[in-house]
Figure 1 (spheres, rainbow, N blue to C red):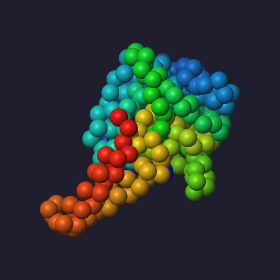
Figure 2: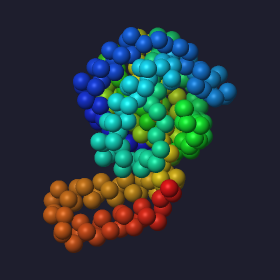
Figure 3: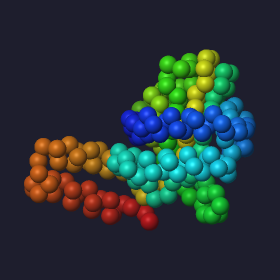
Figure 4: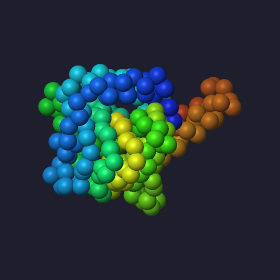
Length: 227
């Protein structure tokens, strides 16, 4: 399931992220890649333990908390602190699969990476190349979104970032452990939740159709969730 979420960050939040990142130290992105992925990775990141990473990570976590589409799509149990990267001219990330187990910094707690999220921090007209290419059951999809928009997709997907030929692509990326481990079940719950939201726009909350759909949704969630 691949979900695009518009305006997960406001224009003001994007501008703030850009200002902080412009003054940040950038290091080789391979420092956070696994042994296999590091061979395909050519980009820059800000250090995960830096003040800037913590500040902007908290900003993004607050944005996720207020976004019902992200929470419906990911059903997050745990979210790894967001990281920040950039691709300048000639940089790319070859095809790879994200590591399945991640360690939450400063806690030592391990989490399963079920869902990947990328938030774009650069307008698409400001760079050429840099498309996020995701291979899933529906084929190959290329994603290049406006600044502040996000894409959510299964971490199990084979994916890559095309080489930058002009400009620079900045973004935030992170993983979530979902309460719903199976992607097909997450997709069904997401579709059902969207149907409920659409129905509630047309009918009152105490309408039998709304109550019936909500009952099915929460009982499925109760049955499938792993906490």
